[in-house]
Every structure is written in C-alpha cells, then in structure tokens.
Length: 262
Image 1: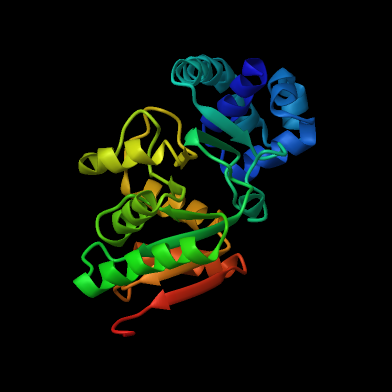
Image 2 (image 1 turned 90 degrees about the vertical axis):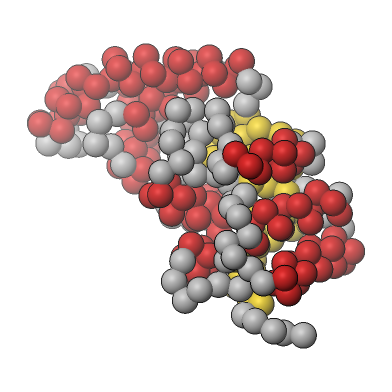
C-alpha cells in the first residue's frame, strides 16, 4: 500500500504538472507507479521533448519528497483516499476537478448518509449565527445520518462546526493547508473535537502553507463533498459565493439565508 501511495503522492510533486495532466498520464500509463517506470522515449510519445525532460529529471526529487510524506502519514495515522479507489468520496469523484488524492484524519465515513456544506461571512450578525445553529440542530433532528461540512474560518464556518459538535453529529473540516497545522490556530480546539466524530480532509500534503489560493482551491472540495451547500449571510463577493457557484456548477442544490428570514 505504501509503495503505491508513494507514487500517487509523487506524481503531483513533479515540476509544472497540473491535476488534469496528472490524471491523463495515470490513465495513459495504467497507474501512477507505471508512469514512474516509463522512460524518456515513452514520455515523449505523449508530451513535448522539453516537458518530458523536465518530468524525467524531476522524478527522483518527487519520489524523495513522497517518501517523507508517506512516513508522515504512517507516523500520524492519516488516512488517504485515491480518486480511483472505492473508498474515495463518491460525490466528489463526480466533479471533473476532484483531487487526485485526499489526506484525512479522524473518524470519517465519506460515503454514508447526507452531507450538507454550510458557508458564509466571516463577520455574521447574531441572527446569522443563530440561524446557522438552528439549521444544524434541526437537520440533526430530521435526518438519521447527516454530516456538516465547512472550512473552519471565522464566522459562519466555525459556528457550523461548533453546532454540529454540540449536537453530536459529524462535522468535516476542509482546510487550505496540510495536516501538520491548524489555521486559524485559535480554532484548534474545534478541530481537535471534530476528530472524535468527523474529522479533517485536505488535498494538500504536509508543509503546505495556508496561502490564499489554497483556500480558493479547497472551496471546490467543500462544494463537491456535499449534497447541498447553504450560504448563511454573505457579501456580494467572497469565498462563500465562490463555493456556492462551484456547487451550482456541479449540479448540486444551493440554498441561502440571505438576511432576516424570520
């Protein structure tokens, strides 16, 4: 297992290789390990000579970094979900830009029950927080197995996670960094409590910083993991509406508490 995982990690660490191209190469060669066994001649059959040289020269470094990541995974009891495996979240696999590999920690059942993403402003009104909390409580009352998904950000995100923890239902945190840190750090207790019933899922390996563009990328996971995305108060532009637009592009339901609904 660890040998296959090494290649699944390493292919994403190669120079100038994107998610779409990595999947195409895996499909063409029959697997990540098979791709790494390909020689320069075989690579030039499916890409330019310059790109093939860069890839071939980058393989050793990518595998070395991947070995370190596998050691981190084993040391910290991290689960992984590869996009071709049956255990991979089926809702997310339906999305054309789903991650190649997911890293997860906690008590996670990504293919059981209903999944509801809740996102919104980082500066909610008290009514917005109350509506978010009430939504989570009443979902728990009405659905036998429901998981709340969000991004641990200030405001509505962390309110949704806390409501799920208080109510006793699973919650999934989708960060914009690796599993070697928690951001924002002030929410570390919420993250720790989520591991008992739910957990943390990310596409980013350890050492990945919480950079802005990573949070934009992780929004597609929040949208893709769920049956429905609910926006609780939002500015006209921002991360929560980006997530809502992504959910809509995946043909998922999108709902909102736009303001004073009571």
